[in-house]
Image (tube, rainbow, N blue to C red; front, side):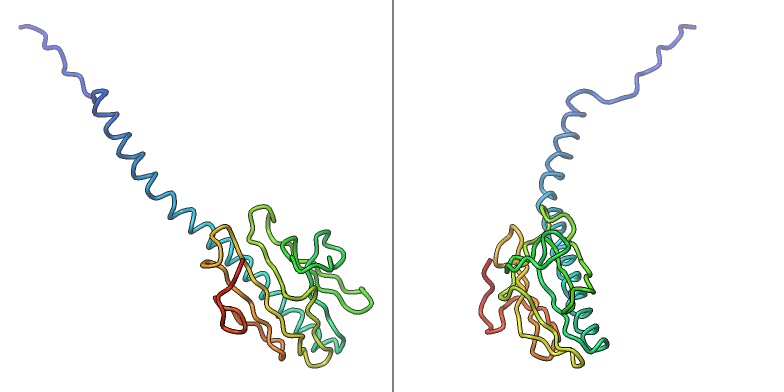
Length: 170
């Protein structure tokens, strides 16, 4: 009896190229969705960090019965005195005994945080604040921007419009 040559199992080069090209098309079409998801995640992290800082400043002012400042910082030690808070957030009391910095993760990739004030002051004992709007923008521009609006009572709220109900600008 003749020995039978086993048939080879596998795929031809054109079949492999067709599969790889279909996989590349699918991967290329999902990349923008993943990019938007990543930018949403970074924006939401910046919003959460900022909300936490506002609530902490309000709470510390009420509990310690002394004024607390929330401001932007670039060195994590002193208020920058600027309205660009992208480098991080800093809580400080009058005598600078309390300094709590909240860095924004990787400022190069994180959204920009701009304020209409150089610092937000929370009154001692009550936690009332100087009203302010913090605008958080990323590469997508104004349509994806969010604002944290701090009322006179010190309560923050998130909005896609400014305090006067106008569209946000980045």
